[in-house]
Image (cartoon, rainbow, N blue to C red):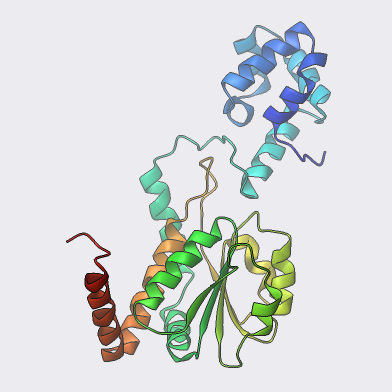
Length: 272
């Protein structure tokens, strides 16, 4: 089955057509969604005072071949970034974050990070592009880079189209494109429009499909055990790149941060 909905949505859609026994299973799974992927058919039957055969019929009525098919569809949705309860949803969050960070930075060589940082230093302009969950990451990236260098812009601008801005890309400009799973449909067209440009893609493992169309792909791990993705790894990567840019710029970065700090004070923008 090609599940376009998760199990809980299908239960809600089909609830009125379910038998009394099937509704008992539906009620139990709605109250205990983790059971879909963590319990066997026999365990679900025991917890709902039904039989394994009834549980099997229940999942077939939802459109799955079996309980196992429903479980695999649920896990596949989570791999695509859909918030879903899975067997690992109660894992230690700190341990998961450390694992995501370790997996991310084990796959990034210092030489690659230095090369990208130097390109961010030398570029006449840096353009950062992000949609959906990537937009606040791109915004933060811009705010950090603006502390140490000039000509950093963020796209898309609210309410604006991208065509004119992509047409305005300079020959020696660096574009940092951020896109994580559940990317917008427009993302593919943007990658194609930027082919031949100096484009760095910061993404999760699914974004590696674009590695032949961009200059560099930096893969960040977001985790898939908890219902929601974690963006600790890409935020940490952004911090690392900005710190390296600061180091390569040296005195120029120090002067710019000093000037900006003086403007903060003159405009009375920050708490003392």
